[in-house]
Length: 495
Length: 102
Ligand SMILES: [Zn+2]
Image (cartoon, rainbow over all chains, first blue to last red; front, top):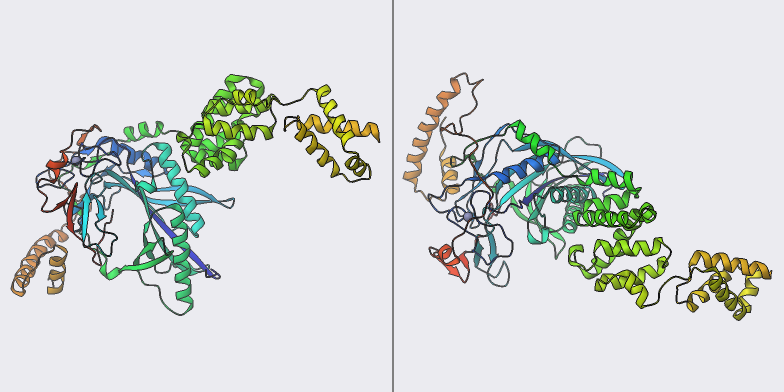
């Protein structure tokens, strides 16, 4: 990896997100993912001669919704245009898209990297149609000389979101994408699943001497299939360009293909070979006059977005900022967290005070770790908000210790059982009774004269050994604070 | 303005038309005439005129977001020149300057 040294990396990002409408953007075919190939098609999305597109009103509404959430202005008047090119995934020979007047323009997304806030401008959001899915027959793209087509995807509403070249590192690019996805998912306009292809991205990468006002020649990176790949691809490409420039070479304007397995970008085509799309207004679709009243209606119906949600978590529950951001960024985590808080509030005020912070700690800690380990989503797990709330309640009321709670959690997570039942069945109730604890403490002190003598000799650490022995004897059920207090008391009596 | 032979050849290539020399010359001539005609508009004061993109004057034609029955797989594939199982099959096309743009 080349040191960036005196060079600055400049990144702009283009994102395509499939709209989560029930039907396609210009016909009534369903948009279900994973249906049998070519089972969700009609003359319109197969591009048959004479078939006419009609705009899905919700697709337009979703585009406006996305535009507003990205702080964009919405066009008062707009239209669709034909983007002409020949490729088998496009039966008509053109894609219905938008050229000079996008539905939304000039917005921004605020990101934060290493505690540094930054505003990334969003140049435009436009609506277009998705293409068919091309599958290469045979073992791989090289050996196969035929391609297979599935038109189920053809005609699904697609929004293209173009940023300005405002990002200066791979980290910023990843933060931008993460924030953008969390906003689109919160809006419900797209499920943004990169692994299913419902969100895709391209990065424009260039380098320039630090402090320069003039951008270098950019390379367009394609075939980026995950956030991790975005990060790697930008790092690789910027290092390649810096090395090239340092050696006296020049970056040429070209499109490069990211090879994830090799971890490299490879030349795909030069600017001279770039397609000329000969855009012109789509005559089959009438222009749009977007009424300001409708836009305001959509604006007032926007859900709470991740940034606002995170701020609320900090203000209302006193969550640490990083926990709040992490939870608010995921619609699943956020709605789970809200449900846990509701359940805690219902269970009683005493626990509710500290409960949300505990819930957040569980969610970003043990719960996220367990989900990652199992490779599953929260919704696929057996953990329900009520179960986590109950577990937090058991700790909050002193019934079990925090350490025991972790082992109870494992069982709750694995089997979906109630924490209270696990505690009962396994006899895990915490021992907090002073008399009972004192008896155990005395026993341990008598049985371990060596460590006790060490303690009196000034070896503070010996106390840890004694606590360990008490925990061993109680199978971890001794209340840690009480144990410490009583142990010190008993030792003091003997000094 | 006169359209050059090269420009005409490029247009033909983009449109996937294969034209011989004679045809190229004729089409370059015809297109030049059309462009000349259109360029007369350039002499008119258009400061307050929005480009006309559609002729009907109709705006905001929508349908509601409701799924309707699609064609069956067999119907969808019935006119396919070539197929493989549930898929349309086409010759593999990997050519510089092209690729799925969406
Ligand atoms: Zn259709």
